[in-house]
Image: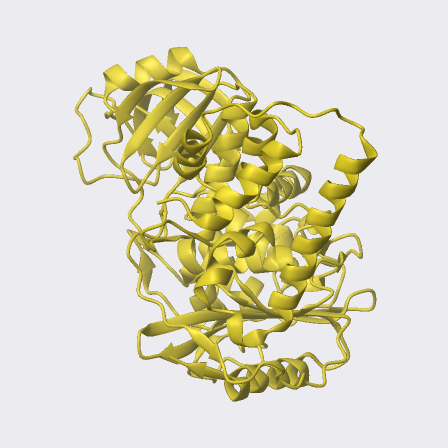
Length: 514
């Protein structure tokens, strides 16, 4: 059922002289789903005469409509008691670029899925050829010039919640091989299409003797039948977009209900901060959240993500003098020694080791590694983020609090073990790979301030002269409907711990947990 707000918007837009195509694109841009847009236009099948463009009267009408909508939105945002109201979850929240949307049936569309749908709508509108992979539905669809021409069944993917979970995002074809040999699995993968790091779309893999691998075997790639794999192999070209989505399915999260309309603001001196609900993407409180600032060692969160997704971390690497960072380190890496990639994640995230960052990036070559950090940022919609090194030493490693919340959201849903490592949780092994062989991971001192807090999901801190003190934390807020993940991000602070404590206290004092 089409909402009245949507019908009114389309009616006014048509009367103003705008084309259906222009209105459709605007609705896609603010998050409306294709089915809703198609349904509302069925109501307006009778064409409305186009008006004369450039008329001062109609320009004035358009300006008044826009100003009215902006005023309404501003009033709505000031009223904290409406944060979780249905009308905010409806049309006006979408106009305000909320990352979360709802269907008419009340089903939540999660932020990752919404970004996917927005990008898909853009490719269709531009009549691009692309590949869509829905890992929840286990379906792969080929689009030619914006039109779906073939749907295929996905046979296997990386196990959800595992170290090998298939990464979601907006990627492109990097290359393809008739028969690619995987140095990780020691198997041949027919009709392989690389879309990101160690991740491919391919047919059923087999060993040197031709024997097929067992059905339960997966290193995180997207596996098809050989017949389908050959068909997509012939369809795609290098740089063709590949959209990989796995929505969260049915997830139970609680709600934060404001106690008052005008909750007193906490005393925060940081230049920028953000509190966001990672389940919905909704901003709870922010200051300069879209200001681009140096982020110091918060960079290492992306370093951990890219290291895991681009490198087979069961490998070891020999450290050379060029590998090491110049800064004095608490964790001392020795020249000439060998270190396993997985082991290095511990000093990277627990002690913010620049040497660990340099060594991990050396697996691929530092510039190549940094390029992939920027590619991953783009795939997550972190449009105001730029990395120039893997450690965060440079003042040119910049981001916004809003962009960092997208990274935290991705780690929370897809790479949660990185948060576990940041708290010092020791894994005995990953698959057949034993951890701790090259680094005493259990003996490392943790420099993350809140690791003793039971509600902490994960965190990373940082500090440089250019960035000041920075910190990104994720907390479990307990509700009767389930735990709600909330991110608190602080940039350019004089005291990141006090600022974080004040924001967390403000959240718990001014919101009811229901």
